[in-house]
Image 1 (cartoon, rainbow, N blue to C red):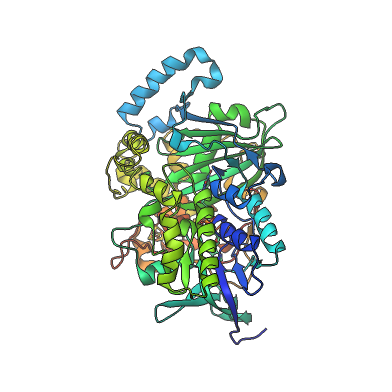
Image 2: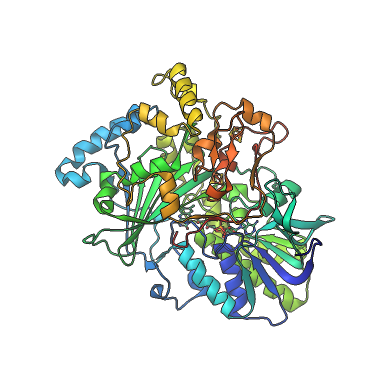
Length: 602
Ligand SMILES: Cc1cc2nc3c(=O)[nH]c(=O)nc-3n(C[C@H](O)[C@H](O)[C@H](O)COP(=O)(O)OP(=O)(O)OC[C@H]3O[C@@H](n4cnc5c(N)ncnc54)[C@H](O)[C@@H]3O)c2cc1C
Ligand code: SF4
Ligand code: SF4
């Protein structure tokens, strides 16, 4: 072990191996350039770490692999049937709870119940839309496990010899000299939890490169470093996000859904929560929900809601008797085009979700991310052929110009304001989405993010401040979040754990993926101003933590357990204590880190 920082020169260094980088490296690998050394670092312990749905129109993926046969990729299928269903509340809990199930929604529920009665029990609690709006359709698309797909993609790219992909290697930061990105620094190893040198200390290597490609997703430390350094273009913001949680399930024998079947749902377990159920080959399904930033519940939880979601009769008719294979959670940057940073600068370019490519109207991020990767790779080839350097101007003329002329940009513009109406409530939000979709983004319903209520405000009329204090006292005394107890008190039934599919969050972590937390790395979740945490009554970071890695600490500052952290990034978004000097940043410092959930099926 050396205590001196090593350095190495390469031509292109890449941060993160998600779909965006898959598109980039696959395009370079198709036409290998023996004089170009390309190295990609992925922080997770496997190149198939990704957590995603994923159903995708796959336009970019098919452009990269024109002869693609889904049967070549484990768990992949062509999209066959798509349905959108509005789920009624079968247990009355989300209506009894102080959710925002408005009068309009309740009236609609009543009417739909009457309409659906003749269709039999299983259907009684859901209303299938008679058709799927064109902007949501994934005709001709693919249903994938993003983990399996990334492993397949990685193997293809590396077998060309043109690129190297190194998992288990987090990039700590971009190296910036005089406003130019000159490469990256890998994370120090052999440190204590605070990052100080410890036994076996090895400073992270510096990689100097002519081009640094940043595709580190919604919570990547390098992307956020560049945002902090160079700022977002005027009027852009990243206030919209969601946390997605999913399970991969072995369906019981006899469930004869055709692979490629896709259900999208809304309405339950809370009106604000969208869900999905996708069928892979081999009687395997992916089932998951998205908890969005505009859901005004200050004690929200994705894990408990996911279980109630699966228990909805519309889905349970398929899931009953099923067995958990895998579990995962991950953030989504949903600001899309409006959150777009500078796409290129001297020595660097941004691709994928960290570059604002995700489309919230079409519910699609994989195809967009992949395609931005292709666009950058084509630009790289063009610049290399012309012998031009990777300057901001040259990257804008090639990469950014390609992107601006593409469907990613055109559809991103249509989606830009599509979901603003949700800030006024679910019905307004759905109308706004339909309006934006029907008018190709010319019209939508405006809305601004609202302040999150505190627990007392949110539960007014259901629980008294004294009830809430009691729950807080009991839960914090046991070192657990409050959401379960609050939901119980509001009438949500207990989840009937069966140890197969319905189980405690910790059991899901053990059975559904196992967290990897290699020793010798600093904690990646820390708090910038611990005194903010001491004064913070809501502690949404703890409530929303996907791995129960954040728990109430003795002095009000949450405790972080790296061995339970699935690296979903939910704490970063869900801390609702904006900093005085920077209202966009929160009190959670979410740094580069190793490990996270090991599950290649998500
Ligand atoms: C539950 C869920 C369901 C979804 N369903 C769908 C769907 O059905 N269809 C669809 O199109 N999209 C879906 N999405 C969105 C889609 O997954 C994303 O838009 C897409 O993965 C973005 O790709 P990306 O390559 O830009 O980023 P990511 O997939 O986030 O990849 C970024 C990679 O960078 C790595 N990384 C981060 N920081 C570092 C660092 N410092 N050093 C090294 N590596 C780093 C990460 O580990 C990660 O592997 C879903 C997302 C979720 C969470
Ligand atoms: S990190 Fe944010 S949400 Fe969590 S306790 Fe601190 S201030 Fe509150
Ligand atoms: S601590 Fe880890 S598991 Fe918990 S919310 Fe943050 S990133 Fe997710």
